[in-house]
Length: 196
Image 1 (cartoon, rainbow, N blue to C red):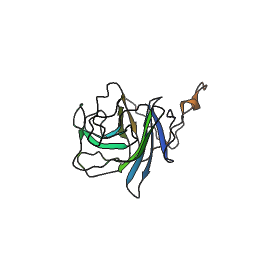
Image 2 (image 1 turned 180 degrees about the vertical axis):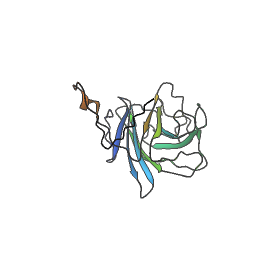
Image 3 (image 1 turned 120 degrees about the vertical axis):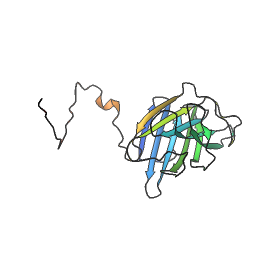
Image 4 (image 1 turned 90 degrees about the vertical axis):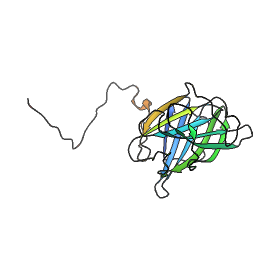
């Protein structure tokens, strides 16, 4: 992981979203039907994590947060109808900040939401692959408060496809460094031959 900031708690899963830029930790609580995330991004501006069924910006359910100069944490529930600034989701607030801080130029925010909120402007976190996007700004929203408006992220964004509910932490690239080859083995595999 790139972030020099210690996490607020211990998580079941983690991934480096972009080297030296963004790290994500999460734990799913199936009993409470919720997921807790912790996002660290190398900025002192706003940070965002979005969930989408198809990838890209359109139809993305987004949590946007920042820590202001006084150390107060703000978090917004937003939705992107198109490839433009996502609007505030005023139907229900389903992303909740738990805590946050800025350390050594990084913003770290812990937040949670239900796996399925039943809100039309939210995307359910399902078993299987979930499409995630992340983005960040270089400054806090103006005004810095619950109704702050985020700036355009320019090239400060990325995406990943992850299985949030049944994720297996992947091996680091260092595990395979120096190997000339490795074998893939399939047990109980069926092969079908067809003659033409």
